[in-house]
Length: 216
Image (cartoon, rainbow, N blue to C red; front, top):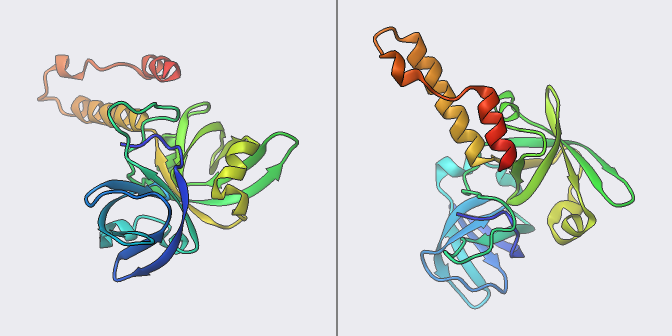
């Protein structure tokens, strides 16, 4: 489990045969979980410059793998006594988005991210989302995209200040929203099955779910 707050920006030494080698000052232990651009990976080796992690074939096909070069965001897994200043992040990439526009203002930067329809269904205005491992707040949702309003501190202390239009990014939607959506999809399946007792379909309505999520 992670919080979406970047610990360090690491340099990719190599990505070869699904082994990702990073140079950084943070020293983990073998077996530790590290989120790299939002993807949860396991440390398999240490060296004097940093450490190595293994990316499964399945995972490499689910992320913007072309961004695992140059510099990357890293975040160690949370400890039981860690502060949670971002939101609960699992390190499981849901989808890949594409930056459509970047507009800078005096004290904020607006990013528009094109995303798959299923991802947009899980995007709630003022709700949380993780982009390349960074915990952010959604400012608006449209038919084909969602918007992020990023403050200068976050912009300057992450790789966002290097991002350009057309770049693909890793997206992880909020785990609570995903859980609620899954429950509601099960409800629809149960209602469509006449052999299931009515009591098993007594699940909260969307309006009730929205109220709960807005408190989160």
